[in-house]
Length: 381
Image 1 (cartoon, one colour):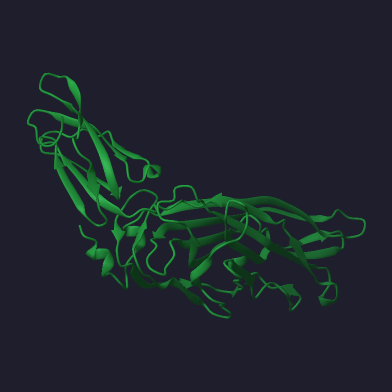
Image 2 (tube, rainbow, N blue to C red):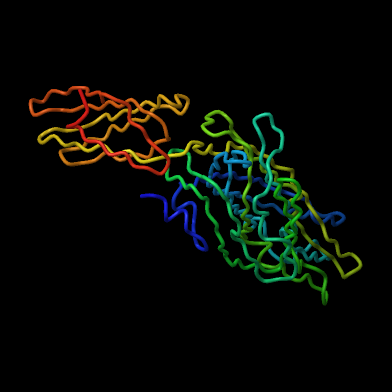
């Protein structure tokens, strides 16, 4: 299993195929009711609706080991989806009579949204840097854009929140995904390690030929905005305490409405700015230790092996490992473990129905990228 697939892979390599990807969600929703028209001696016209903004972050946490002049670092491969649902905000483009006065009304429709996503330490201070700057860059007047990966990480690296495959030489990745967009500009304004975007809707309603033009579909339905980037933050090898958080700010969320009574002179374009929404979530902490593979085979006919327990004596802070699965004769317990020397125990249920605890007589040494193979019939007491 010597990691060749990781070491030599470029192009379409997907880190989440080797190390688990975590998903994080947050939703900002609210109801809106606003006065639109104000006809003398008549009831006001109101528009009301409900919006929601869903943010999904897909996170692949990784750790690069200290080597030579290279410091130990955590890496976070991030994919964000900001989904704005405006369908329940839009009442329509319609007329409303007030005695002898006919009001033409259109709304609500989305006009803009801004977002900031940034990484914090546990003290609340922004930290880190980009290994890959967010994609896309600014998109103006286009019907499509591209997100993807194009970066390299050298040296020893591992990923996932629990011990998984380690690479001794890092990897490169280059991939892209085409996205469609219409009637919207995406303006990037990244600063430091902050992922910042402004989403500005184009071709909004306006007065034309004694009517109000219809809003674009993007402003009255559900639309998704995508981005991808990689953060790097300091973290020591074998560290099990340092944690990082991600902050999400949604602001400048503006819905519009239009109305007029007789013509262009009394045409009004209204804006309703929604309150800012902010949330902070814990990022998954990557395993920060190099790993190897451990295999223990039940070699005793007519018995069952269970409760395989390993205790890392070299790095006690990384904890212990336990597999409570039941393995019959010829079956193998297979685990990825952080490197080090381990005490090993297991339970064997014999043909007489009794269960005994077995202790391995020595220490089990797990090395980076190696595989240690043992069987219950040898070396236990």
